[in-house]
Amino acid sequence: MDKQHWQDWVNGFLGLWIFISPWALQHTMPSNVVVGDLAMWNLWTVGVFVLVVAAFALVVYQAWEEWTNLVLGAWLLISPWLLGFSASTALVWNAVIIGALIVIFAAWALMEGQKPQQAAH
Image (cartoon, rainbow, N blue to C red; front, top):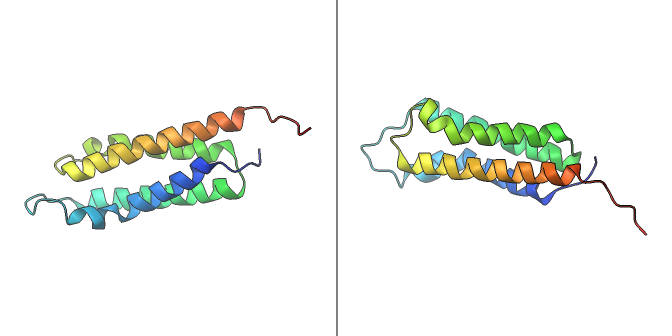
């Protein structure tokens, strides 16, 4: 399997967004909402991993890369409640929407990667 998927580009950008989103969204949150360091580190770490895995997938496609991003996206979906930063509506929606998109695009790339390659005529 050595084909590039456009979905990996999208996941790379989503990983970059997750990484920078704590800074970008900080300005839209009410001043009384305190978001802990754990939430920030979670977003930074997941963002870096999604970005790196997507970059690997662009170089040499392997199914494990898509599975890894699928798991990371699923983690983003549930992390606001497991890590206790559900008080920040902006960060919750950010994690849920971006996590869902990462899962969708990783699964899409996985399905495309499983299709048999047609011989060129």
